[in-house]
Length: 185
Image (cartoon, rainbow, N blue to C red; front, side):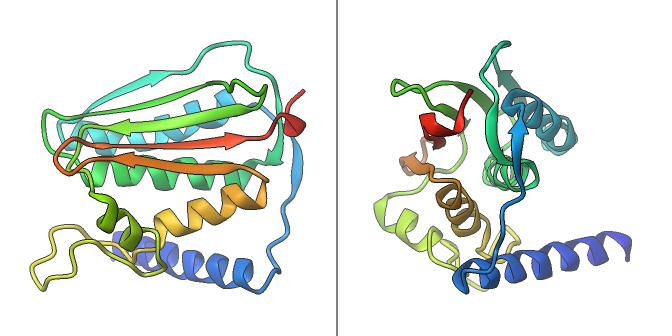
């Protein structure tokens, strides 16, 4: 009952966030934050899921990254959505890596890479639509609402960032979120 309640609360929260973004009513509570710590904290929360699924979880987060002017809760929401998807669409023996660094233009980026099922271009387009789910059959193997990627994308854009997906069917997925140089110190 507790797990079902938490799952339902996450779904309702995601729907409300998407609605607020679409209405232009989602306010960011920005401050100087430590991206490396946000990612490490997100990794600590998600690691048990990876271990339960026999998925290797790696972190490649260097020390000394510049601080980021952002809404900490929303950046963590992006990271958790991406990490949860990377684990959900993976298989035992697979791996998930979260990494971060300085972008060529001086901004900050973080990346989630997995060795999961991957998607082709058409499936990426479906996954990026609200409530879009690549496997829509009655025998779906993965639960979810189809809001994780569109929400993460919208939150990245609210920060003036870029959101990029590179994926190939059967070869995993890499999602990169890049924040502009103007948001770093």
